[in-house]
Image (cartoon, rainbow, N blue to C red; front, side, top):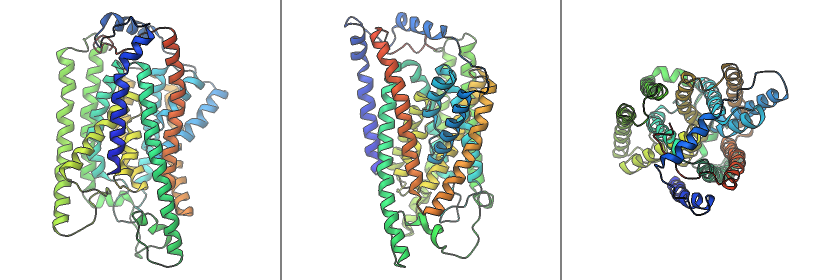
Length: 468
């Protein structure tokens, strides 16, 4: 799969970036520093500085800042849900530079906006029929496969965000976003060309077979003269409601474990205490059991279809569900969640492009990625709310804006696909949102990192236990 090349690029670049921490810290401190992962004296000093930074919560008052934030938030939410990436890379810079929030509060409010836009998009997609099959546009099998590993990866990513220095996170953002955006853009161009050939062939009434041909069946002339069911009706008619019901207990288990961990740290319990690590490790069996259940199901279905000579794909993915590919998807799920937890993005910047790489059509990839992102972002929102990390007036207002944006974004893109007969528009939007996020977060991160180097601030890894 072409997705393997992207993953190899990310793992190689991330490894080199992490290994460069020692060199950068040594340079920033004039060659005399001896950074240590558990350098408690240095990390305690930095932790003191971080804790001494007060929350900056501006009042919600009508003015040019609120108006501009509303416009950017609406457009970012609409485009983010269309591409299936959320838009957190746009929201955080907007909230810090324009509105004036501190970075931590901006990240928390960003999660509220992502949750609102994702929820309205899922509600809209439940009433949208699949472009070419009588199945839901939300692929519950893929959601059940990736969600547990994403949430497990988010837990790991949040822990790494405590340890990793700010400049390293900035480098990882640039590596990730440039890689996924460029790959998505190239894929969009390829789809656009195939759609052009397909449109010409269909206008000439010639038969034409293409890997993307099924995208435009409903846009030109239906194959059957029967009414298409909505995703909600299909979900009620088959076992998809059972698959969806599995996601809720997984979400609740992760939520309870995260809230208990956060309350222990807040109440003075050491972050590295036996109770803390026990709660952390309990997330592994929960995720692995659900993931294993879905893997066995997909493997059996795929094997049964192959033996029967049926070439129809299981789920929407155009891959063979064998042990190698399932392991690869597990790695991608954990990687996406880790990056999401580390960068505060929710994992959509990996999951959206990944679903396209494994052969999922753009409409289904967008809807499924947004569905999974709704669970991961809501998990963070509940935790942030209990920890009082964001002001409610701003959160409710911007979340309301995102809810409207998510609905109208989905409505507008469906109309555009119907008019232009090009599903590649979704992939273009996806690559554009990722690139915009790379630019905004990269510029801010580089500026702050350069100032840290000039001030000879500590640039190495922090101590996890004392930095909680």
